Every structure is written in structure tokens, then in C-alpha cells.
Length: 239
Image 1 (cartoon, rainbow, N blue to C red):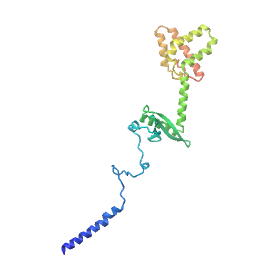
Image 2 (tube, rainbow, N blue to C red; image 1 turned 120 degrees about the vertical axis):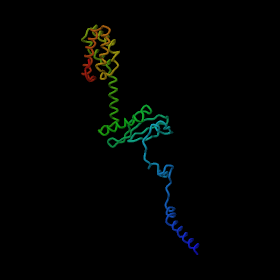
Image 3 (cartoon, rainbow, N blue to C red; image 1 turned 90 degrees about the vertical axis):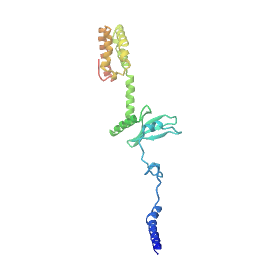
Image 4 (cartoon, rainbow, N blue to C red; image 1 turned 45 degrees about the vertical axis):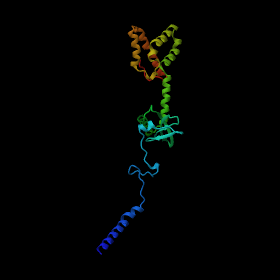
């Protein structure tokens, strides 16, 4: 009788175990987990948070048949072309319009450099400036400066003054510029020339004993810079 009683109690306890522990877990769907606990492998890929790019991501990214993008943060992405070329771009909105800004070519422009350029563009946006338009303006100014070299300005000044000089005087001036000044600063944009840079050219003349010619050359440069200021191609007279 005691054995039958113990058997009955065991069955009751086992039934309780099935009712209160096993069956509820069987009825509740168990999520599928990946190798790392907590990452649901069945979750849509778009729901996963995007991670910032790493230097290794940029280096190992392979091209495909069509251009593809590797997104970083705050609008920055690396566009990979079918031929393997990689370009940094920034997507942004200005006055309600979506725009793109080119930030350079990888690997000449590293990930850190691209992020720095992106942050600079975002600061312009905060100030109400379109970074694309700002970049174009800088390029335009650089082209203007490249065309306004000291030699071009000096030759223009020389041509405009030929009528009031004797032929010999005019020839002496241009010869002095071609021999001593143009080799030193003639190729430079006028606005980029500093007083120490001009002084080097003058001192080279003085070192060979041509003190009077050096004085005249300096006076000529002073007149050229004054002409540059008057025509909007120089900011100050450094002579």
C-alpha cells in the first residue's frame, strides 16, 4: 500500500511539473539566436543599428558590377565604383533640397580626413552656407590667383608705362625684372608674396655688389604692387 501511495504522489508531482513548467515553455515560441547571445538572426537586417566605418572596411571593400556605398555617420559615405575607384561623398540637405558634396578620393583622403571635411561642411550648414557653393567659390578664387602671378602683373604694368619712358629706360626695367626678380617671385600669385620672400631676391642682388640696382629693383616692385592694389589684384604693398 505504501509503495502504491508513493507512486501516486510521484505522478501528481510529475503532472504538476508538466503543467506549470514544461508546457508553458513549449507553447511560447523561442527566438532563434545567433552565435552571440542577444542577436536575433531572424530580425530584418534594416533594423540593426548601422556601425561607423573602420579603416579596415575602407581598405578591404571590393567593387561590384554597379556602384555601391558604404555608409559612415552624419551623411558621410564611401562610394565604390565598378573599376575599384573609391570616392568620399557627403549627403546633406540645403533649403529643402538633397545635395551631394565630393570630399576626395580614397586612400589619398583617409577616413579620418573625410570625417574632418564632413564636420567642416556641417559647420558651414549651421551657419546657413551651402558647402558645395562655398567649395566652388574657393576653387574660383584659387584659379583667379593662379592667373594673377607677379610676372603677369609686372609685364602689364610695364606695357602700360612704356609710352612715358625712353626706350632704354623701359628695356632696363624689364631686363632687371627678368634677371633678378621673376626667377624668385614671378611665378607666385601676387597676394601670396610676402615681404621676406621679396627681400631674398633683393639681398641676392646686394650680395653680388649691385646695391644701386637692388635699390632700383625694389622701387620698381613697389610701383608694381601699387598698381596691383589699384587693379584689385594685390592687398598690400610689401615693397
